[in-house]
Amino acid sequence: MIVGGFAFAVALIWSSASEDQANRVLAILSATALASILMVTWVLFFSRLAKRTRLVIFGGLVGVAVLFSACFRFSQFSGNMMPLYEWRWAKRTLPTAESQAPKPGAEPDAHPLAKLSFPQFLGPSRDCKVPGPGLATDWTTQPPETLWRQPIGPAWSGFAVAGHRAVTQEQRDENEAVVCYNVQTGSVLWLHTDPGQYKTAIAGEGPRATPTIHNGMVYTLGATGTLNCLKLATGKPVWRRNIAADAGLKLDDPVDQSGLSANRNKSKEWGYASSPLMVDDNVVVSAGGENGRSLLAYNTATGEPAWAGGSSRAGYSSARLAKLHGETQVVIFNQDGLAAHSPKDGSIRWEFDWNVPYPHVSMPVTLPDNRILLSLGYGKGSKLVQVDFENGSFAARELWKSNRMKAKFTNLIFHNGHVFGLDDGIFACIDTGRGRRKWKDGRYGHGQILFRANHILVMAENGEVILLEANPEKQVELTRFTALDGKTWNPPALTGEYLLVRNHREAACYKLPLAKPAEVAAQ
Image 1 (cartoon, one colour):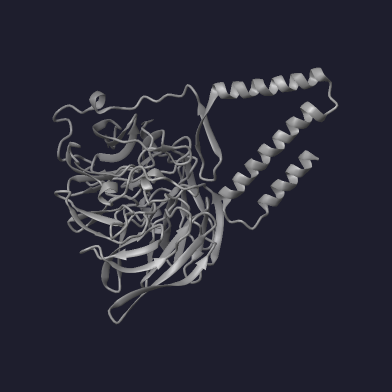
Image 2: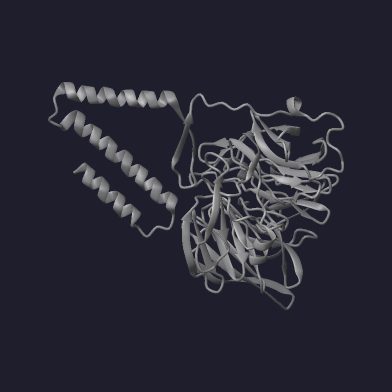
């Protein structure tokens, strides 16, 4: 009876109308736990088994629990809220600048990798589109070359690349660290640390934002709100700010049961995640303060506040530039919805409300004809927003809403009238006319994607890298290889033939085979 009831409950949950995979998984885990408790209770107290048999069963269950606890410890949750465990004795030895620092003169200015560039989150334009040569489409006969693969401090940051330098953020003990690696060797060129630690069971540990490299400087935002400007060549600090303090937020604000801070302080929830955006002579980050201090800009040279604007609560999406009706604007998907700011003074140009009690993570996607696509996970779907301009004023309105694309942690790609991305962990394609699904196939989990030369590179949640054809009619998986082990939410960096990937445990650099001239012509 218990088994039958459990099977019925699982079938009911899985066939439910809910579009939120995480809620389904949590419901099934709850049903499993309840059924297990009922089954054990029946065996021990209500079954007709002999007393000795019941004692043996009880002892066996206790022994299994003790053995499991002795061997494994809880690590984190997957994107669909499955609990993940690791060996208790698992340890990592992180590379340090002291032990691997290059000798003076070992890094010449005219470095052979000087042209490599992946300057910020999601590539040059923050749209997941990466310039460069076409990639070979068969990694079995032409496998990627492993340049290095090694432990790394926990974080959900990606790499920013300039020449032979690849910069990311990590958690190192009780400090947030900005670390610069040699692209070819993985050796640490320099390391900068600041006091601060963010860690929760659900959200993991360490910084979230990807560094930004601009004019020989590195700009980073830690999970606790530390904004740094460092010299790219040496890692020496130029200036530092705390955006929570600048936004007037209290670091001891309570967090409500929904996971959203009762007093707007995002550093106590899932951590600050806004990758710094360069706008003219300023660096822009999302802080979420009230009274016109939601979006903050700082002078790149001095770190002095340049402007502030808006009063929306900060989400986990980063700001980007968009040109709408001929005017360049800074757009940001806040927790209250989409907002557009003037890059000159931070003033609000227009807003679009989408206030739901779920994290806003995915970047807004700019489309032709002054349209912007927004997407959420948790069963909420996507909305296409039309930005109008009339009589000197901007206004935004909804064109359509679709549950056919639900970008939870991932970011989306617009290409040839279609949007490609991970729909709650499954790859999908929708049209931009009405948000209708073209196809959905490929369970890659909650990973990240990049686009180059009509191909989509998927960094899957399980650590595999998959190459897809950007085909709006059907899924065409070309090739794949295993790049990392374990949960991978971090965005990859692709520059030239070099692919840099990482998760909360390890990082690696691979040299991908490039397409031959005949293959390029066919593409």
